Length: 319
Image (cartoon, rainbow, N blue to C red):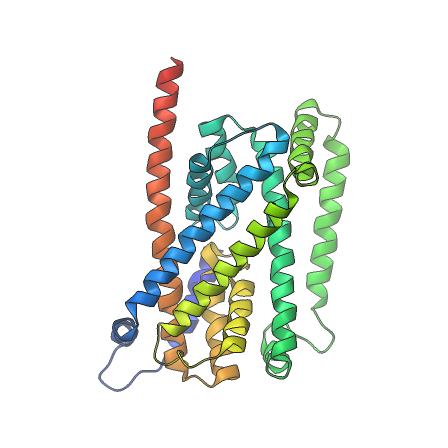
């Protein structure tokens, strides 16, 4: 995955054509210097606020499992998870549960079940956004999707369908073989408890509100960064919605922090749909993704160190 990410980043940079006597790093840096730092600061605020709300939503879902955790520990674990995701794709989903276990003694299998619920809700929200984007910009998006590598006249390539069938078959077979094992049964029961916790929520409306608010903040992250650059500041609401949908799909790819896929797909969308010069589109994406990554690294490291200190203090108290 890291090799694929590196290859996609290299391809993106390779396609960046700059003027004579100017190198690519200078071109990207000049784009950064021209950006409105006030809007980029608002991006950072939206990032952190969205993850505070995500942490509160996680805390809410864990209540029916009889695990009452603090918002602070939930936020620390969420940010540690996003830090790990920058290195190991989807590794953050497990690491945040393990971090919470060390802080709050919440069983990993239970908290992981609730994380799966969160991801299902996120996929539903993403699907709604994609549908809305297609309704708003159908003519443009139809042509854009046809240019993507996975697009064919008949839909998805056969190997994707066969791969999915094989994975499902292996998973079902493994479950029936191992389900009689006591340790596996305990893990499965805990996972099921976390997975079904959403149906036992006392405040279902609050859970839906948090979910909508998280994705609304994600949208504003895209809106703020579009307004931060002179080349994109004139794009309207429908364009921001479409770029947001394309970016969300790119970030969902199983690559570290969406690196590579984001840098390949989003510039293509900016060039094809809104006729932005290719060099400006690539610079825009590198700065946007880089700025988000810096935020995740800084707050993730702070959360990791804070968690380490709290866990150490907790262990000393027990002794």
